[in-house]
Structures are given as structure tokens and as C-alpha cells.
Amino acid sequence: MSYEKFKHQFVTRLSEQISSDLMPIILRVLDTVACDYNISEITKALSVPTGDLPELAKIYLAAKKIEGLSDATLYNKHMYLRLFYAAVSKPTESVTANDIRVFLYNYQAERHISNSSVDGVRKALTSYFAWLSGEGYIERDPSKTIKPIKQEQKQRLSLSQMEMEYLRRACETIRETAIVEFLFSTGCRVSELANLKISDVDFQTDEVHLFGKGKKHRTSYLNAKAHVALEDYLKSRKDNDSSLFVRSRRPYVGMGTCAIENIIRTLNQRAGIAKKVTPHILRHTTATQAVGHGMPVQDVQKLLGHSNISTTMIYVETSDADVRSGHKKAVV
Image (cartoon, rainbow, N blue to C red; front, side, top):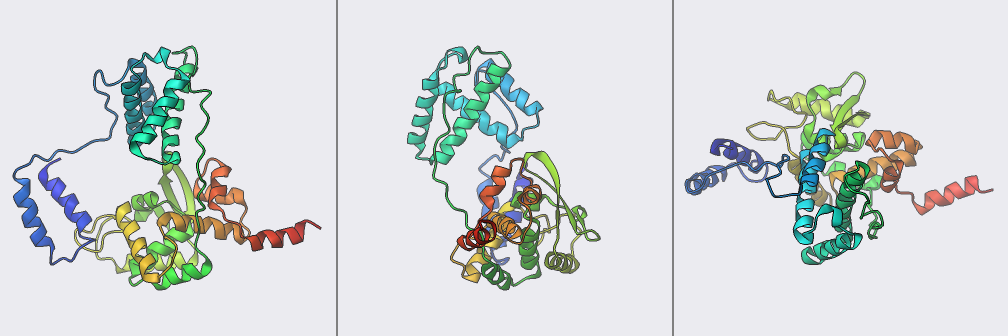
């Protein structure tokens, strides 16, 4: 990465956070300090140095890349396997279930991470050994007897209709209103929103073409509030960028996930809502309100882009009042 490219990205991200009066001062200091350093870009693309991993691990990662896993996912798998083999120091064929358990125990103890986080490492290792076994590279799968790590299921609280109204009232710009209404109407992930182009929205049919997790395409929809808010925002723009949402200062380039999250965080504070509000909480709110107003869970599953309906159920909250009302109607 050239220094100019680094500087451009730095300015783009910083412009949303500080006053424009401070920018010249910061850039002068940056230029002065940067003279003593070489700027190079770190890539998370699959790269397995010689001797870093056993040959079987390299074959596994190459196969997963061909299957279409993202570079970020491959990077994590690579890192976990490298740490595992460095700790175990055994040929793959000799690895036992106890080796994996000891590694997971030490990994968690050294890093002070949650059960949820260490279970992610377990999944990566069990996926690896199951693949080796299935492909015939090893006779037995040592991870087969390792059970999922129990973890506390934290309740993810969606916003009530009253809290949604407070969030709406906290919006001070056309862009803020459009972002809130768009996230709520579509139930999209913040990464999906950051990737959207204007051409992905069809105002005639109110369809939004999303491309997100798992490299899957799906369609979501604009309600009336989101349609009007988005049209108002697009009409107010003076730039030619193709991104659906752009930064409010030059250079007018597409907003990243951090910038969108910062806007929701600001609205959360401005609205005085006690709950922590994030784009993901708005996604929960979409699902919960959709089911509460009679939308079948299978349709909500499709709207959110879940391959498994059990994942959708995590997003759906049912109040005691709903259960009581349903019981009165159904159990007679």
C-alpha cells in the first residue's frame, strides 16, 4: 500500500469523527511522522508460509478456499491450526481427543476468553479433523467425541415500538433517518448495508437486493417510511458515488460498517434509550415485530437470510403477554 493510499483511507475514516478544522493539523503531524516509516498493506488472503503448517492442513485450507470461504474465515482457520500444531507438536495421524481438549483449555486460560469464543475455536478444529476423516486422509476423527462447550445464552433484547419511536425522533439529519428506517425495514446486516449500491434498490417494486454472509444473494423490502426516507436522502446528495450511503464530508465515498455503527451509537445516546442499540439489535427488532404482527417464522427466516430456522428463533422474542394470549386462544 502506498502512503497516499493509506493517507486517503485514514482521512476518509477520520472525517466522520472530528471537526474539519482539526484535519489540517492532524495531516501535518501524520506526514511528519510517516517520513520515518515504510507503509505496507496487511492482507488476510490465504497465505500459508513453508513450514508453518503440515501438508494436510495446507490441503484443507486450499480446499476450503476453492469451496468459496471468505478470506477472513480462511485467515481464522489458518491461525487456529497454526496455534494448535505449535502447541501439540504431533503428526496429524497421532492427534487424540485429549490433545484437542488440552489445547482448548489452555487457549481459553491464557487469553481469558468466553466459552462462546473458545467454542468457535473448537468448531474450527472439529471441522478440520472431520474433513480429513471424510476425505480419507486419517483413519479416525479425534474430534468426534468432543462436545460443544456450554455457554450462557444471553437474551438479545429488541426494541419496543416506543423505543423505536424515540430512536426515530433522535435523528437530526436526513441521512440518519434513512439509515434507521432502512435497517429496520430490511432487517439487513450492517455489512450488507455498507456494501449496497444505489442500483441495488428498486423503488418501483420496493425490493432491495442484498449480498451478504456466506456469499448469498437475497431480496428484502422497503416499507413506506423507509422508501420516503431513502428517496429524500438520495435527492439531497450532491455527489456521484454509487454507494447507497456515503460519508457526509469529502471525499464522498461509501460508508463503512464502523461509520454506520457510530451513527446508531450516537442516536442511542441522543434518544436516551437504556438498552444498547446497534444495527444488529435493529435486525432483532425487525424479526420480533414481524412475527408479532403475524408474519410466519419461515418467511422471517427467508427475510433475514438464515439457512437454519433455529438461528431465526434466536432473533425472535415472545413476550409473556403473547404466550398468555396464545394459550387462551389455542389451549381450550
